[in-house]
Length: 255
Image (cartoon, rainbow, N blue to C red; front, side):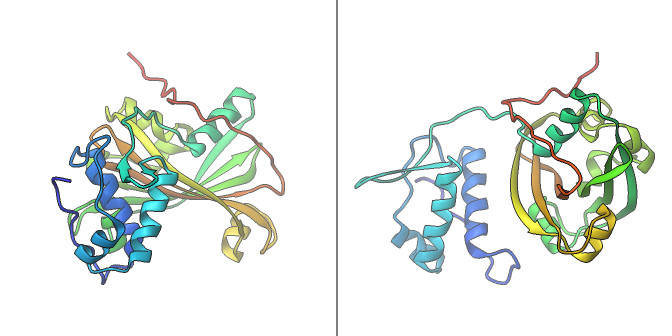
């Protein structure tokens, strides 16, 4: 391993194992760790970074599950074979699923701010201090009934003149690609069941405590630079949908 893993920030609100995951993924994306390259042992990584071996084990285990790393019995941990990844987005698939079914899908912007990113936002979106971001909440409706509540954060440098009206009837991804000529590469997303809190449940028109799904997604540009961080809540009390994730998403690129 040619490059040393950067020291972790023990004062950060982001857990140490998550910081280690992010740093190893960055090193893989930027070519500092190549396909097939062997990582130091868990014991050595823990000693070099002054963290517990359990923390290292958790980070490496997560990266193996996400196919960034591959463990070989008796030999060690290696960077997985390189592979091309298209944008896989359950949130984009939600919109496309509705379109394919001919279902009317509307968007209502319920909150819109242009402000400086806080420490966590700057860390996740890899921004310098005092960078401005758009933060908006979008309520997605199926046949005029609330179904999905999204909180989206985008660095203002990518789309400085973005306005709420742009998103009332347009796909966010189509706007980013067609108007701002941004080349989206991939998205990392997690989905988990949750009990909907009072304010979220109220926006979705269901009782507090109802079951729902929580999506969290980070979308990257082709230069492996974070473009969009979205947190979304979906109520399946009223609606049910399924989606297929393909290697690449059709952005409807014009011209």
